[in-house]
Image 1 (cartoon, rainbow, N blue to C red):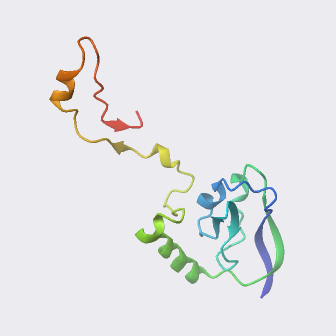
Image 2 (cartoon, rainbow, N blue to C red):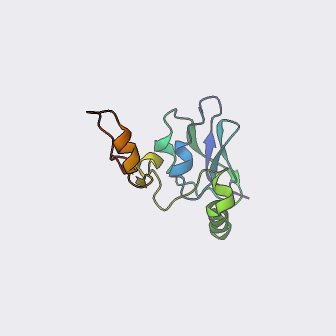
Image 3 (tube, one colour):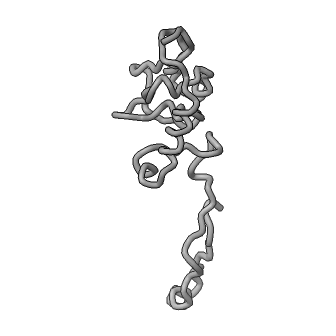
Length: 134
C-alpha cells in the first residue's frame, strides 16, 4: 500500500446516473444499488477522467493509502466486462466512451408488407421508415 491518488464517490450526492461508469476507461466504477461505487482501487489509475462527467459533483480525487494501480489486472477486468454474459447485467465498456447508446444506428425489420400498405384506408400514408435514428 502506498499513498496515491484514488477517486472517492460521495454517496449522498450520487444519483446513480452512470455517466462516470462510461467515462472510466479502466472499468473501476460500477452502479450498484442505485449508486456509483469504486469496484476496486487497483483498477483506478487516479487520472480522474470521470470527474467532469458527474453532473452531481459526487466524485473527487483524494490522496490516500491504496493498493497500486495494476494494469494487467485492469486489462483482465475489462475483458471480463466485454464478455457477452455480463453485458446484460453490467454497463459495457466500449472502445468509444461517452457514446450515447441511443445514437447507435439500427435497422428496423424489412419493408412493410404489401398487404399492410394495401389495407390502409384511402389517403392514409404508411411509413416506409427503415432505420433509427432518423
